[in-house]
Image (cartoon, rainbow, N blue to C red; front, side, top):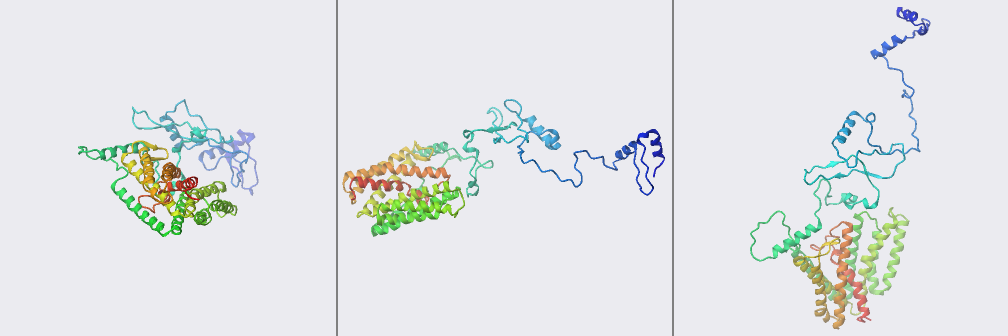
Length: 476
């Protein structure tokens, strides 16, 4: 079918003459002008290009050899207008040192493996507190560029303590806290009335009346329990030591587990519980025997995938906990195996308690110089001197009256050995807690923390006492 318009187009443009079909076909071919007019009205869609997607097309699979990488900034035709205006606003208001931002590699280039970060440049002290965010990506290329404050352990998200981050106040510096505590002690120890009113910055120093009372009550209860077991003989004391070692080991492995380690806790705790009784009955044979068994069963623990995790790291964590608590604590059973075992344990216990109590009192009241700020900020040189002095004096005045430390030279040697070993045992336990990011290993003992917090120095002093006694022929 044609009309007058078709005839006119045929005369003017012979090359565009329509192909005439029969009436039954019902199809006619439009001329160029008529087709353009129809397109202008929007009644039909234009012809698809060679690379345009058609209905029913299946997208081609991406080339597996091409590994896309992030690219920034995008061009104007690659992002929506709103995003483009946002990028333009950031670029207009940002100041970057060293010139304009360098673009990242194109997405078709292989990845570089570098870690992009956006650093915040602090404003000048003379200006306001606003910060300027640079648009140029900066890369960390070495291990020295990774500061400890740049990240936070994932495990802290599951802790009861709130994680300090962008929404929380930053933690107070240890040096400032220590200086404030020293100033508080000085002001509290001065005579006369002070005209200064207490301010919000005042901080209650360690060793306050409430804290000291709690520690004293707990300490007296522990002392009574120990003295009762010592009076009942070596067997009762061995049972008490075994229970303390087991609880301390449990506290340590719980702390390791909270920090992401997966040690063979059952194997290690069983080893810690049996090493003291075996040492009490079989002597030094217990240490090599239990260490071999714990090592083998720990390896089998991960071989048979009782816990599916990294074996090397967690085997090391398991053996560390067993040796630190089980082997060192097992020397108490070895000392008790001798005839005068109660006297041996009582002697080392008096010296260690004297070191802890006097060191705490002197350090909290008169401490000025920090002993090991990176490990334990609250320990002072004055507390160390006071504790070591107390250990030696108690050994000469009290332990010298207990068999088998009746010889003055033997008692003095014990006091000096405890004065050397106890501080290292205390600091090493603080080092472990600081590395794990915890304050105390437990809360069983009010004012002291857990059993491991209370008997940390004793773990180092037990083997030292045994070898000092052997060297001086105090025991056969």
